[in-house]
Image (cartoon, rainbow, N blue to C red):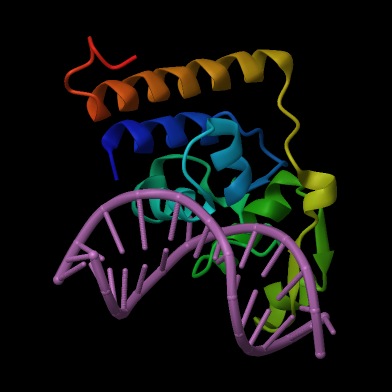
Length: 138
DNA sequence: ATTCTGACTTGCT
DNA sequence: AAGCAAGCCAGAA
């Protein structure tokens, strides 16, 4: 995974507000590069410094392996949830998930500007890297 | 070049 | 609602 890609992903994730969330695939789409699995790979290895819990599966299930910690944060942030998470908090049993329909982040115009800037910077860099002999390639 | 793997997604039982 | 199969995208071996 190129560092430029990792940084671009983290830059976008850092913009997601508390109480909202997006799916891995959403980030890839906003970035216009790579797919859901790539975002998952980035979050898995480099997500610790950003609000990683706000990026999750399209189903609303929390990032695998971090369900407990994520749930505590969702409750704290007032993120819309579905299912019996209360029981999960008590006993560790019970199914729940984020209500992505209600919680999904809707970027403001300003957010879109920042996202576009990140996406453009990334694309520019990747293009340069993939075409060492630019000049003639038109 | 081929195969395997994974913090993914979607559609169908 | 819960599993499963395929499709998907890239990096690693």
